[in-house]
Image (cartoon, rainbow, N blue to C red; front, side, top):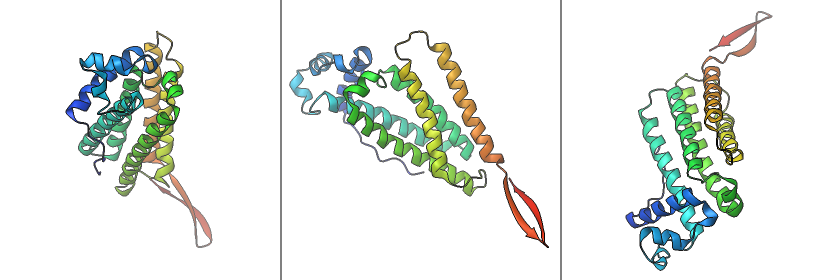
Length: 223
């Protein structure tokens, strides 16, 4: 699989993003100012504007860096996975962990979606396209190797991605509750069960084809 072409940040930019990410996670997007980010770095605010024009740009870079890290890790682990099934399991495991990480960093809450809706939508739409492309490649690889049997990879990839999106929405809707550990554990188990069921279906799916032989119809099963 082709390694994703992602933006790289300089050492100075990464220091700014580390400080900003700490502030966003602790206080939330709306309560953090460029002054506080600069104070956390021990620099004057003006020096931040050389790298980022405003707080929105800082936040965008924080999200992009997290997304880049996920894509790089995903690419490495997919290269090491032997089968298409293992690659799908790898993606699902990493994606669930990544969703929880973003939520814990206070980056997937309703406050941010409200304040930065256009930016928020663009960031995650672009990321979703990259994710679904990985899923399509995995599915097509499995089909080529006769590990999977399906009609079209694109709708399957979209379905899997939408299911994981449901986990994100659940976390957003419950972000004001404090005792979520057990519910989250059960929900995560259900997601794994859901995807294992999909994998089983892909590997054992029976395609019935009716053909005529000497005026009679018979059913051929393909696994």
